[in-house]
Image (cartoon, rainbow, N blue to C red; front, top):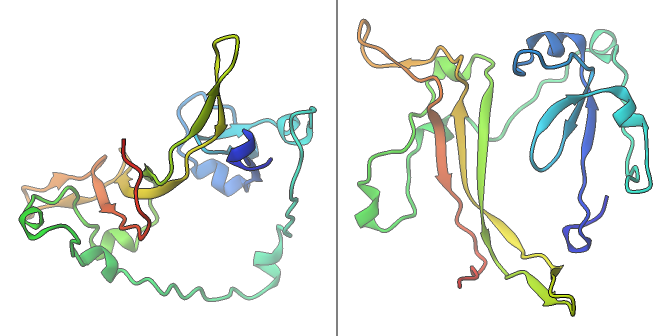
Length: 195
């Protein structure tokens, strides 16, 4: 655990239910473990010993428990999301007028597609706000003393390859599997660092 400044980072282990395991979309031959490792780079099933073993370089920071039978013993609480589905239909651009006529880089999801649970991929690109700092050691190696500060610059949400979503007129539909449903640049109020 720790911050990026001291070379450490946080990872999460999550135990997921049997129904989620059955519906998971991991590649074939992936071991059927009840725990997921989630970190900066991947989400993958891991054995329980990876969750409960703490060598010197691992320190548990927070433990969170929930009762697995709460869904059957308590009435469901309605979730009201302040972000409506209309956000997908609004194609406003903060770019200069000359760039706004550019062909869209994604096909927004239909109301029917949004009403169906789906698996998506998320790609995030970051921009540097400050440069990383490093020092050259006497032995010739370069060591990073402070990592650069980053800010979210672009987010893309891509449909899974098994998506059944289509676009076009009946009889001439085009499958949308593997295509972006959202591709947005993020405007940051901070000044960007450039080389």
